[in-house]
Image (cartoon, rainbow, N blue to C red):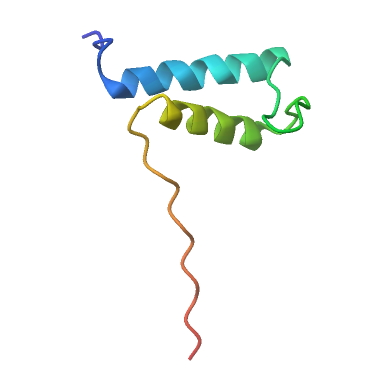
Amino acid sequence: MSRTSSSSESKGDRKVHKVMKEYKQGALKSGGSGKKVANRKQAVAIALSEARKSGSKIPKKKAKTKAKKK
């Protein structure tokens, strides 16, 4: 059972894989300042952002709900 290359999920997977590989090699740089990305969470955020820009359907992060005061 192989994935089809036309599905948006696999396009997003490939983009995320590519960006994370760049991060592991130390070649991933942030957009504005151009500094090297040192934080893994930041690398994941960049990967998901680029995947969304390329048109893949990746859900947005759910917002934390505030606790109600009694």
